[in-house]
Length: 221
Image 1 (cartoon, rainbow, N blue to C red):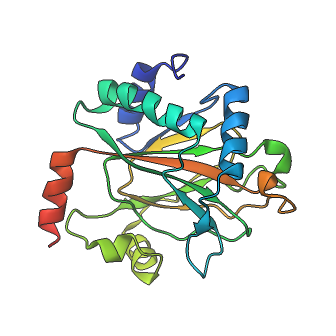
Image 2: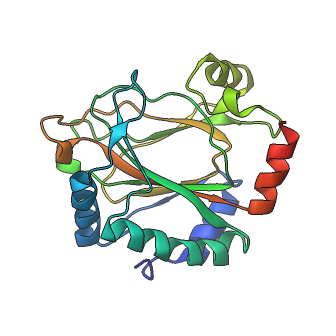
Image 3: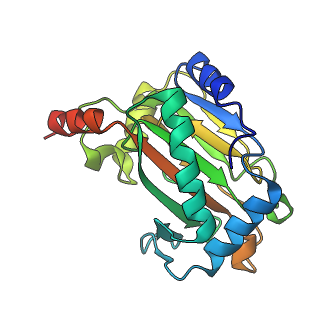
């Protein structure tokens, strides 16, 4: 499924960026991306992410294409980024409102976020993507401080960021591979909200080294 991607080149660009991020356009075939989006929309497991955001969250969706993507991703990631990496979690988000994302960092070692809504429904092509801040969570920061959508993350970024954030515009069939310790947020989208197929949708895949995960958990207990 991902044989067309030069994963060795992706890995080199990632490390050249200072283990920050790399953009992968045409992540899947166009037909595959459209099928994945359609299957996810039809899936019955969507739930409110939280009462405040109103965005819809789908944890480990078991559609045919989603399972195929999950099975196909782990091998190239392990071969090119770390032999111990395992796909620890994956989920989909559907932005039912055009609201700004919340600044946070994630747990894990490597994240891929993948955008699935066709560009014709994006009403502002310079927005709706990903904002990466010049600040990373320290290893001993409690989960509640960096995972939660609150003042702690924003305050930490405000105190430690020394450069302007990197803003990656939304594009259909674009994936961003990045270090989840970087504080980040979804840039405010401006999508057509008249139907779920037109709302901003992404899938996210979280890879972790089990040994590193145990070490991090011990440090923050």
